[in-house]
Length: 496
Image (cartoon, rainbow, N blue to C red; front, side, top):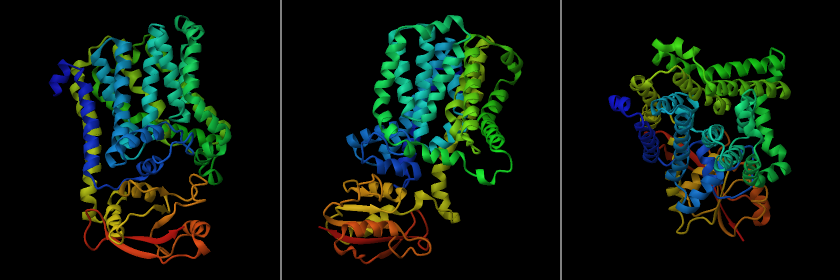
C-alpha cells in the first residue's frame, strides 16, 4: 500500500474512507453504551428546534434527520460523525488539489491534517459539533479558493452556503471567513472579488441558512453564550497574573499544543528539503499564511476584550486546521514532488489515526481486566432488560436525571419519550398519561433516594405529589467481572 500510494496518490481518498468506515464498525461492535457528546445527541434527536443551548444546531439537525429516517441507534450516531469527518478530509484534499494541481500534494494535505489531535484523537473520542465545523471549514476553503481562481456564481453561492453552515456549526467559525477577507486585501487581483455583484448572492445564501437560528439567538442570547463565556473565564478569581496576560499566555500554550505534533511530523518527513520549503512562497502560501496570522490575532483580541483567562487547544481546532494546507502549498511552491515522501507520512498518520480508534476499542475490552470502567461499561442494556421484565408493556415515558443517562435510555427505549427535567423548559409541565419511569444513577452517597430534580417533576405531575417507592438495582458492568456492578435507582409513577 505504501508503494502503491507513491505511484497513485489519489488512493488516499479510499484510505480515509476506509478509516471512517472502520471507525463506524468498531463503534457498533462495542457495547451499546455511549459517552457524553453522543448521549447528548441521542437525547436531543427527539427534538427539532431552532436552538438547543450553548452549541449551534447544525449537528443536532443532521442527527435528527438521520434518526427520523433510520431510527436511533449507535450506528446512526457513528454514521453522522464519521460522514462529516470524511467530508472534511474529502474537501480538504480537493482544496489542496485546486491550489496545487498535484494529487500528491493533496495527499500530503489530507495525511497531514490527520496528525492534528482534534482530528485523529478528539473527534473519535467524544467530539460532535467541532467535527461538523471542521467540515464547514474545508467546504468554505474549497469555495473560497475556487472563487479566487475563477469567479463564478456557483462558487460564490458555495461560499455563502459554507459560511452559513459554519455559523450554525460553531459560533467561532465566523473568524475563518473574516480572516480570509483580511488575507486577500493586500492582493490586488483577488481584492476585486470582494466587489463583485455575486457577493450579494453569497450573502443571500448565507442569510437563508443562518436566519432561523439567528432569530433564536437574538431571543436567547444568554443561553447561547453563557456557558462558553464562563468556561473562558475559568480560574479568573485565582489567576496569578493580570487577566489579559493570563489569557494570552493560555492562548499561546493552546496554540503550541495544537500545532506541535503536526509541525514535528512534517519536519521529520520533509527534513532533507526543509530549508527549501520554508523559504518557498507563492500567492497561495501568502494568503494562507495571512489567514493563520489573522485568525490568531482576532482570537487574541477576543481574549483581551472578554477578559478570558482560559483557552483549550480543542477550541482552536478550526484554525489549526489551516496549517496542513499551508504546509502542503509550501511544498508545492518549492517545486518538490512529494510522492516519495507519502509512504512515510502515511505510516505516521495511519499509526495515529487508526491506532487511536483501535486503542479506544481495545480499552473497552482491557479496561475491566484492570478495574478501569468508563461510560461504555455502564450497563444500560442490562438495566433496560431488568426493568422491562417487571411489566408487560414498556413505560409511556421515562424521566432521567442527567443527559448521559437520558441519551443512553433513548438507545435502550427507542420508542419511548425520554424526558430531562428543564429541557425544553416546558417539557415537564405535563407528563404523558400512563406509567412513567423515573431513573437516576444510585452510585455515591444518597443514591438510594430519588433526586430532588425528579421529585420536583413528581410534585408537579403526580396526584398529591407523593413520592413513589424507590427501587435500587445492581447490574454487572458491560464486559466486567461478576463482582463489579453499577447501581441504578428507579421508581414507577402513574400519570393520569
